[in-house]
Length: 112
Length: 113
Image 1 (cartoon, rainbow over the protein chains, first blue to last red):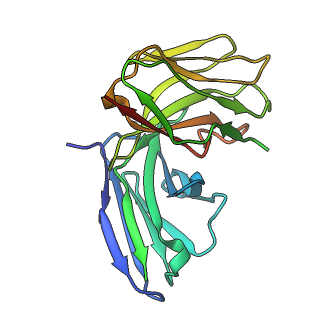
Image 2: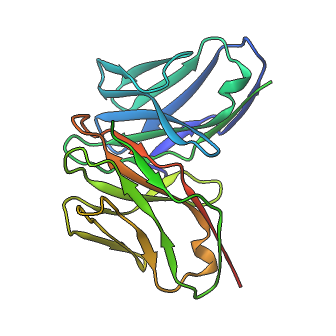
């Protein structure tokens, strides 16, 4: 079984709709991250959380919100989706003191 | 700020050719450096890392050496295979940012028979 899972894997939605992407991990890590990947831009950090009650904005947080419901779960929401949020979204985890991040398989989101 | 610059792709090579993908980083502090690989349809996975100057990271025949004097961490492999076709990302730890990483834009590698 995968250590970091994301649901859904693919989603097509319309402009203005609210969307939630979910991430779960069984690695026992305390730190979790949400990135988006766009062609030619690499990965950009949206939000990150170092513990259940800790939420921090990344470099491109506008238009997004997150919830850390438990140590193992970190959800990303688009309150009102717009077409330029069409991208591949990745969740990642890491442990305190360890630089390596472990990535989920990604969610491909298309906003029409 | 902290950033990473890597060569643009796509890079197309024949099987058994020598591979170099260049990566340079901004010299803020002494960051840990990473190469991640993304195979088609999958998430990123760590390929190798180096945590201090002159360290050499290696895995699956790939190598990269942390060069402080040139602020570089170039990825090399002596003989690529078709199965190495993927997107490769260079990354560095963000200074004072806990475990946060900043990534390069990625380099697509295609290996042909």
